[in-house]
Length: 620
Image 1 (cartoon, rainbow, N blue to C red):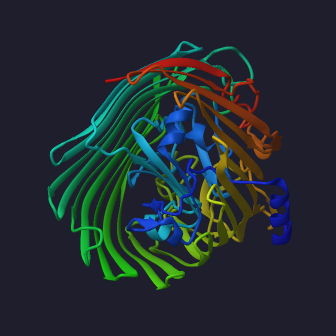
Image 2: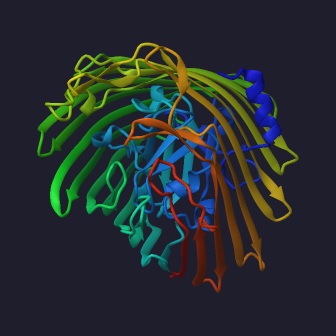
């Protein structure tokens, strides 16, 4: 492990920054993910990156992964082109240790070990993305170990807007989309519907068989102001997709997955934000079905759904303080089918959550969160987070926090998968991670924002696979601790009309091997960096968006020999051009992996090849 002084000096020398909003200053930014109530970024005791609507729309990114690659502290593992499994690891954690939310509704798939596949998360109808880093289980529950990504949909406004866009590119790719938003009386609405299709690319090192992808997505949001003190909100995301893929040890094969996903939420809110007492009563329902086929024949199926009911009460007991108390009940159901095994399981979880914000002085505040989960199938768990925030001036903020986060065992880990060869372990404990973070934010000349953060995390009770001489296996909690240290530095601002975001992150993740010696963990890049540039010209009727993303070398496993290999680092350049002909018509062109860089995030699986496309958008 590298000492803190070396981490800090090394990252400062390399000059830095994190993916954030294109804004001159986010002093007044309100963060909805960092607390049970919306909180000013200046009061938040932690690191948060914000991608705003301008960056989302000017980049014309097809999915969330296109915006996150190279961001400080984030490593992506993508097994091919569009639609291929795309995992995210944040601050060196596991791929199922990052919680992805859509308007506060969980996107992670319990049937796939609790990970979120970023390949299927479209940015249609998205207004803002918040990337909250560090231990967040106290607020958001199991899985929020490395951080939380909350995708926030557009809301209806008094100005109605409807648009139709068509895009086409290489590999027989196209996308057709329709979006609308507005407000009629007390009812606000926004919705988008899109269909995309591509022949894809060959993702294995050998052969020339392409692996295609097609998806239809709906994302909608309604807000109904019943009365001055009462509001109902409803959101729904639906995905229907088909993704072709190759064998686990990659070679050309005729395999595909048919996917169906639903994330939905209905919330009743009573009271105004500043009232002494306001409350939210809500229900969320999510469903993930994944059916695999080999040569046209059924191979396996996983089907998971989650029903969550919550009641949140917020008390603004003082002008400088608020306390939120929430009660939650969740029921998770899981079904798995294959020629070797069929099972249906379910888990109930009851939770209580406390969240406190208190300003001791105009320059100093504290935050504290506590959560207790009572689980029906394994040991109960608690998680917490405390933080302090000091602002010696309007342009400087210093913060520190310490928290404990948990990841519950997955259905497969508890109940097994193939009875004759992989058995579950009902005595597993939740994985536990303790994280310390310290950082600073500076505003420089009203044009630049700079942020520096250092973190140190330790993971214990990590769930690992145990192999037996008869070729059977099970899982158990590991002895010893995995360690993660890192530094992230971010800057955003202007050079003349050009808007810039620059980021660099260093991460050192190690875990004990069978002899107890700490070794480097796989699929974690030690160095990541990104540069996003937006240049408007032609009286703001045209703009160019450039994204340069670097992901350093990382370790992986060659599963044909079960030996360790090193995957080389790479730099990907994306370029987007937008031109507004008039108030109705807009043209755009995009190049992903502009220079057709050859790379692998996962050993044996070719990364995304060059994608060139152009399109037109008509606004009614």
